[in-house]
Amino acid sequence: MRFIFILLVVLVSSCSEYAKVTKSTDVEYKYTKAVEYYEKGQYSKALSLFDELGTLFRGSDRSQEIHYYIANSHFALEDYYFAAYYYKNFTKTYPRSSRAEEALFKSAYCSYLNSPVSNLDQTDTELAIDEFQLFLNRYPESELKDSTNTMIDELRLKLELKAFDNSKLYYLTEDYKSATVALQNMLVDFPDSPHREEIEFLVVKSSYLLAINSIASKKEERLNATIEHYHKFVDTFQDSDYVKKAEDYYADALRELDKMKF
Image (cartoon, rainbow, N blue to C red; front, side, top):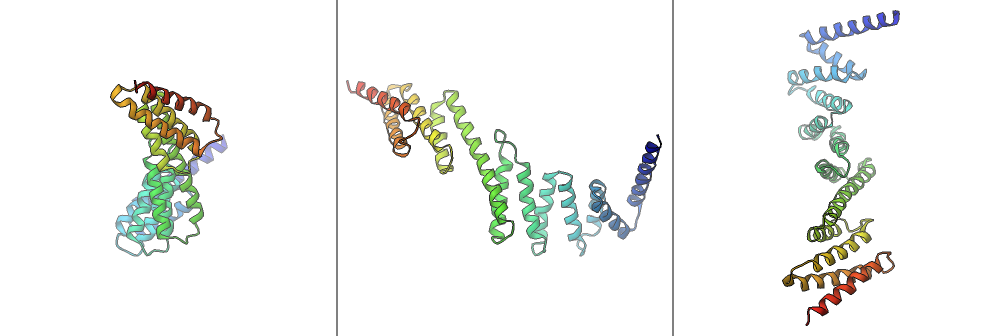
C-alpha cells in the first residue's frame, strides 16, 4: 500500500513538473528540460517540447540541434515514418552538418524497418533500397558501408520472394501466359536467384501448358517456344531433378508439332 502511495506521489509530482514546463515562457528553460526528458528516455514529453521549440528557434543556430532531437525522438518511439521524414529533411536543410551522414543512413534505416514481410506490399522495401543506394553513393567510404550492403541484400531477397510467389500464383491459378512472362521477368530481375533452377523449369512447364491449351492459330508458335525453353533449361541444369519431367514436356511438344503437319 505504501509503495502504491509513493508511486502516486511521484507520478503526480512528475505531471505537475511537466505541466509547469509546458506553461513556461522561458524558452531556454524549456530547451533544457526537453533535453533532460530526452536523456531520461521520456521521448514523448521531449518531443512535445522540441516540436514547439522548433518553431521558436527556426533559423537560429540551435535549430539544427532541435531538428536532430525531433528525428531521434520519433525513432525512439518507433514512429519510423515520421522519423524518416525528419532525418531526410535534416540532410536537405543541413547538408554540411557533421550529422548529415548519420541522418541519411537513419532515413534509409527507417524505411528498412518499415519494410513488411514478403507477401505484403513492398513499396517501403523498394524505397529502403533506393535510399540505402543513395547513402552509398554519397558516402562510399562510410563505416556503415558493409552493414548497408547487407541490408540491401536482405531487402532484395524480399523483393525476389514477392516476385516468385506472385509468379507461382499465376501458375497455380492456371494463368499460364502470365506465369511464363512473370517467371521470365524474374530471371532478368534476379539473375543470381537461388531459385533459378525451379524458375526455369516452371517456365518450361507453364509454356507447355499454355501451348497445348491454345487455339490452333497460336499453338505452333507456343509449342516452339516450349522447345526453346526446354533447351535453355537442360543446357544450364543438365543434372537437375526436374530434367526428366522437362523431357516429357519437350517430347509431347514435338509430338504435337508433328500432328500439326498432317
